[in-house]
Length: 293
Image 1 (cartoon, rainbow, N blue to C red):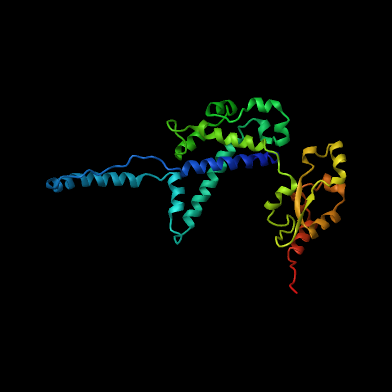
Image 2 (image 1 turned 135 degrees about the vertical axis):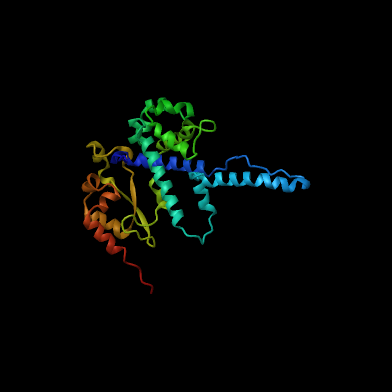
């Protein structure tokens, strides 16, 4: 039965899952040192006898190997070695299996995290000294049982079953230590200033056009910043949230709602696009292209 993540925890869950997915991929694709059988050179005078005794054993070994179910690592490595002309159905199924496995492990671990980490953002993390004292970075494997005391044993069983962890080489705590370290480090990283995000904008965030100029729109209009903080609508650290919009969409947004309504109700792109009028506008303006002279 799948566990749903509350809406106010989705952002941190997706951030945690990204770090976990990276660790899982690195674990299942890293080369492993396995002892290989070496065929000893047999004297020529014993060639017939050697063949008669070794062939059954060789056949038996091959049969054992063929009956072994390939683990997740073998499947993923196979994705990169398969010729491009082969059927991709199996590849797609294996990628889906990996995605499902990652979602399952991420959900099971995230739900066991302390509550304050599930919703904390940069402002919460940097303004709460207790969090810094509790989570001294970088974390080590010895720290994980303290921070995840209620982790379901089935997680360890699943990771071991797929060959991702083992008690001799690397256990679950050693796998999760860098994951949690990266997750906490991301929470402690300040968001980029508005202008720095321009390079990441793939196009207008309303209509999607990428061939027109963009400018940044303060999702919480600057005219009501002081009022928004004073009345508790938003925190001061959230006032610089922006969306990159084309000129047409930028003007439309300010015609669609006044400053106070934008600050109180439409302070994210998702909230804007939830309105039928905005979606109709976006669909219409997205079809407009400049005509060459």
